[in-house]
Length: 537
Image (cartoon, rainbow, N blue to C red; front, top):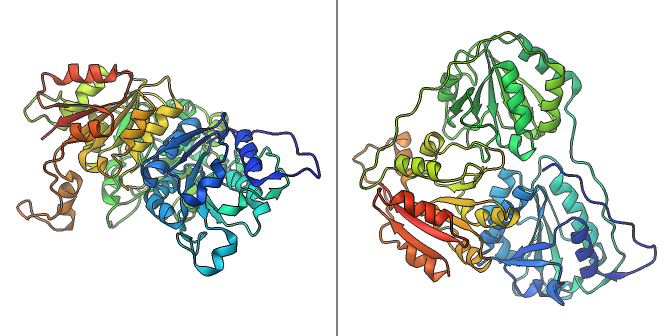
């Protein structure tokens, strides 16, 4: 998230207003006039005489609320404002708060609290430890000591949320605080871009110039920080083979580029094998590396130098080897473009072309995604959550432009269906495609209702294999044989068309591969949300 905070003229000394009005003025100054929420009793005072220049986006579950706000914040490059209900509401939202933390998404979350006067009596629906409940997955949490301090706390929360690495913050606000008198709080300009250490950047530039065969490993922060074009230029200058970091939630490099090599898995030995032959590995905007299973041996190929540019000092601290610069990805890459030359190197060998996926009944995931790639506009935005299909998506549904792919960096389900709603709200001129697994969709199916109420032109494509396929595929890692039964993974008898229509969203089912292209074209042309339930093998 790169823009600087807006500036509002300072308040006149000695003037007073209500906490509610002071907060609303701050939100206007921060360009945060969309409020995401699912209201409860302790939040109602905020909405008294709801201002006409604000928009309230209702989600039918707190997890959906946070997912929508996350997508909206990422697509706008500014923090979203969320209003949750006390302890129960924050608890319901924690899965997607965790995902927002991993996504590095700036969110300002307010949570209702019972009135201060009855807090000593353990009142109904209060939060006993409001600031501790969301930890450790918020950057900062606060319940102001005085009602008068609420606007200052929200301002501070915004600045913290927007500082790299971005992330969610939470402010607990007692119900009787909103009507109290306080002094207005002026929004301030607080910079976001942090320059990496020049000496470390000089070392990285020198290592890149000296390398014989460099590899770049691109992470989500490249696209988050608006560094796509500069990274492409730097990779082309150094004739580097470009890989995507494990579990990346954004696309940071065009996947049809001559130098694009593919995706690294979250397995140490396989990463080392795929990077074999490179003598310099430069990780940009990602950890080095994210692992999913226990591994052994070196973290990079023997003899290879590991370099890293990250906006997260914690990531730099736990990296087991190599040289790391900490700071803005966009500033760092621009500095390397100024510092490095264009060494004489050969381009890496291109990837072998993929065979075409052929139609079958039931359809393969490859055929469905290949067809979607052929009928969609390359500028359309894919918001994906289908873990078992993701390796196939990497091959058959390439992402070609900046800010056209979003998913969760956390591995937690229930994010992408509501996130598609948030992205569509933020980018009303773009077509948004929610590519969701059948199992994933049931974590946040309520998002369809909000999409329908707002008449957002989202095409939700459900990849329906009637099971939690990712678990079946992952089971051999833990010693399961193909013939071993795996409890709790079958999902029969889910009727997604009926579920969609019950939530006021149109739905259509397709099982015939010959009909798939036309069904997808019609769905992509729809001016309102539609769900396409695709039966796959």
